[in-house]
Length: 171
Image (tube, rainbow, N blue to C red; front, side, top):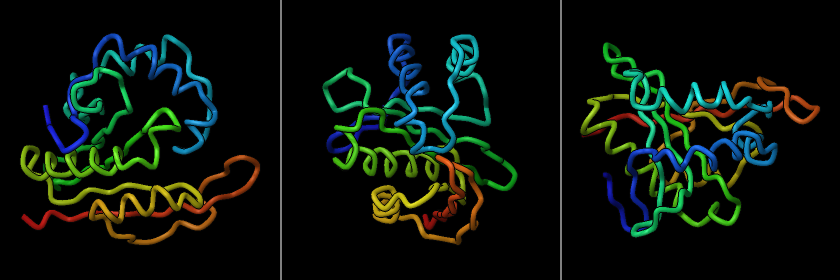
């Protein structure tokens, strides 16, 4: 378990599946991450049941310290051991837990894990559209804006830019 000041990162629990399934089927939650498409129970179960089995992906639950309630999750995907690079993404499920600093702290803990445990050199993440709250959190967590893909995503009836951010290991 990775422990911060207010949150801790740990394994997903079987009891988390229902909550995450609901988040994945919420248009409000999924539009923060891109295109909303309903997820079938079978496809979700396949995704959830591979957590911990795929060497190119690490998924941590995010919880307040001393509380089993799930706040969200942070995942490292497309881990490339030769290039020592990966992508990182985070989801805070319920709106009342966004903007509280939980996500930024969880992201910081996960980045440290990537440097110290996975021996990665570079992490990349993306922001879809104009998400100022996410941009501020990611910049505070040490990410740098690398560029913008103009009109890269069609979302909610219009084209949106995608902002690419990265962080390099300085350890």
